[in-house]
Length: 440
Ligand code: GLY
Image (cartoon, rainbow, N blue to C red; front, top):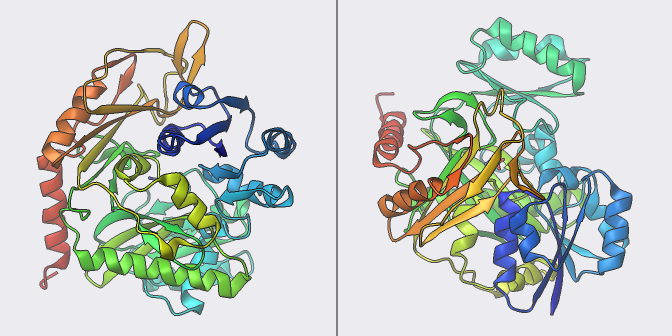
């Protein structure tokens, strides 16, 4: 029997719970911010609480005495939950607060790659209140730039020239604005290319890649509208993407392997958990956009349902630093995930709408996200509601299944119909060809 405590309440954690529970020996407990019916139905017991309530997490852990804890989302990592669990002699899948800087501090990660001479950084400079006057020259030296606050911003702090602002003057103004609320701002050159998510499992010594996936940040079809937490994602049966080569994936993994080693050299601590690299294929090779210290949401739903190897065994191999001894296998199937979100999301979401789930089509899966089970039914919050996933032998079939699944959920919701479609994939491939063209 493996007693596992899962922290987190989204569709990502619903999918993690399902994958852990495929092992018949798993006894799952969960600490959740709101009552996600998917997670609750898979758990022997659950506790509702905030991710910054360390005392409550401590009391619940002491009551459950889990063999290990799986931290799903970044908030508890940033709040030092893994450090707290260490004090209670409980192992975790997820880094300590110090190592979670890989996600929570953009400057930490950029400087780490620079110090250990690891490929993947764009041109970048780090500014604070003392040297902000030098930012103008650096911004002027770049063709276009990206401004990143140093800290967790829920995906809303990063601003890109051409998307969120247009002139160098605006870039400098935004840097100064960021410094009102953050100690550091990172300025980077804007990279052009196609992005992919490579979620790697690591025990601090060995890193293993899961199949690459591509997320869709914009709210509306055709990549229009505001940025969101992610409206959906896809992965392919050959464990590449239509614009991605085997070499690109290997390069992403190589960077991650070197970063895992560099973290140990830098801090004396082994990183045990997920290193999810947001990479971009550019004319000058694979570059790193950012790391996240947990699985992607939605990209978890593209990889964990395909995992053939026992996930509990994989978690134990991470904890005991035995990842090099096991082979982690994934089915050769394509996946498409489409998020149903409340109307008006992300800027002005309709709150507390009732939703009803009808018959879910064969081969489809629904993972609950920010929904709350009340006595009289299921209600949305202001965030993403449910992830509809299709899994099949190719993208075309997987997309149709996911699309069909969206129809089984009734409520004031919308989704992106174009994710995983031939038309959008061809657009990505054309873009990649343009970027790599020698005339560019
Ligand atoms: N796919 C975006 C994220 O998980 O942060």
